[in-house]
View 1 (cartoon, one colour):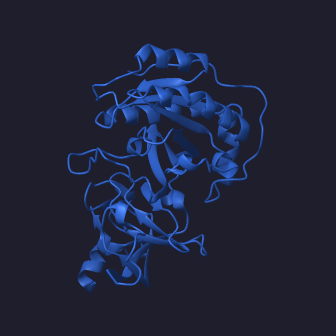
View 2: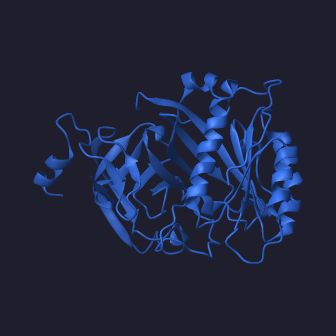
Length: 125
Length: 206
C-alpha cells in the first residue's frame, strides 16, 4: 500500500480513521477508531464464497495473498459485525457477518488477543 | 470497546437440518441469496451488533452448522447461552415434531432456566406449507416462547426477531447483569443454574 493511501486511513495515534466495511455488502465490520494499525505478514486465501473456504487446495497451491497491512483488535466484541470460520488448523478466518464473503481477516487460536482484518480486503468509509 | 455497549449475549440457533438456520443470519440481496444453501459448513459463529432502545448489544451467535445431523452438539455449545432461536420449516411437519427433542436437549444442557426462547417458523415463501401458523403460535405459547414466521426473503422479520429476543433478554436482568463485568472473549464457564424466574409470556411479531 502507498504511504499516501495509508495516511488517509490511519490516524496519528495509529487507529482507523474511517469505519471499516465489507467491500461487497457494506456491512460495518469496525467503527472508526476501534482498531490499531499493525504490520504483519499473513497469508489469506483468495476471496471466495464460504463453501470453498478450507476446502481442498487452498493450502498448497498458494491461491491467495500475502498481506502485510492490517487492522488489529484484541477483543472480538470490538467488532461491530464479523463472522468466524471453523478452524482451519489453528486458524480461524474472519468473514463478513452479513454476506459471508471472505476471508477478510485472520485469527490464530494460539493468540486469543489478536484479530487481524486486512486493509486490502475491506473498504473504508 | 464502545462505551455505550450495554452487554454481550450468547445466542444459539437450533433446529433440524435443512430448516434454514444459517440463512437467518444472512442479509439477503439478490446477488447473495442462495436458495440451495446446503453448505452450512464453514461458519463457526458471528458477532453482530444490534440496537435496542438506543442501547447497543453485541451478540455472539452460534449456529449448529450441520452438526445436528450427527447429534454431536456438546454441552459446551449450550453453556452460558442467554437466548435460543428454535427453527422449524413450515413445509416439513417432521421438523416441527422434533421441537420437543430440542427443548429437552435445552433443558438438559442449558445452565440457566431463565433462558429466553424464540420459535421461528421458516420458509413461509414456499408454496407447499404443511404447518399452519396457529400451530406454531400454540406451541410457542405452551412453552413460553416468542414466535415469528419468517422466510429468507423477509429479512426484516428476521431482524425484528433478533431485536425482540434481545429486548426480552434485557428485560430479564438476571440473564445479563452478571456478565457485564466479565465481558470478553470467553463465551463459556458462566455461572450455572439460576433458580426460578423463567420467562413467561409469548408474543407474535407478524
